[in-house]
Length: 207
Image (cartoon, rainbow, N blue to C red; front, side, top):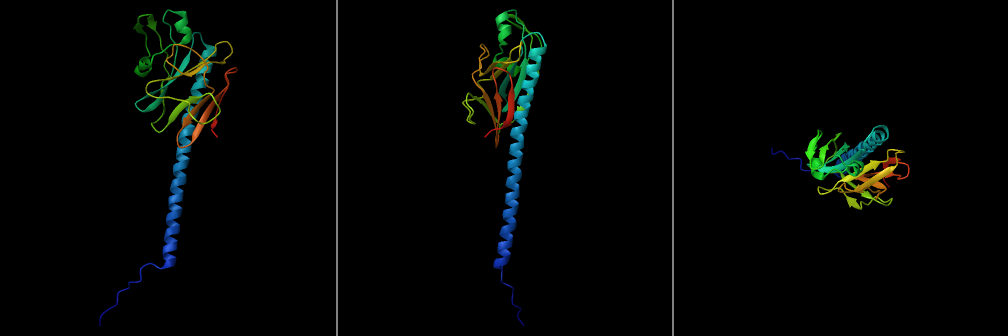
């Protein structure tokens, strides 16, 4: 006797249950992905904010003029805190560093046309290629001037009272406070708001 095959397939209820389970799995994965992106942006913003604390402390507590540069190298944002003594008071006060010097990461005395350049290095990898860093003069989350491979961000504090003397996309040859907010963008956006007159800087989720 010939046996009949079961060709019923999925019932409507089974299909609904399957789709519901798939929706929950996809939703959970998307939430985890968003949380990871949020955590990374926050982590990188906190790293930069902590470097500002170190820079401000050095500026107030030691002789010489200290500056922090943020620059892109190998697809990642790096920071370097430096001081230099090259025989010219103005150059020392402005803490001039070229982009080539930053990328070379020199941490010993090197010969230049002006004399010996002493760089105190605290270089670290801030964030990967998915992170964007830039500056704006407003309170918005839109980056006005973005950090890229051809420029650098320079930050400085005054030695007497710790107020900001410099925050700009710069070639390093001048000091000015052109921006009040640093934007760090991953899958979410964080900002470091800076108060020029006091040197206060606040890192938080940017709305």
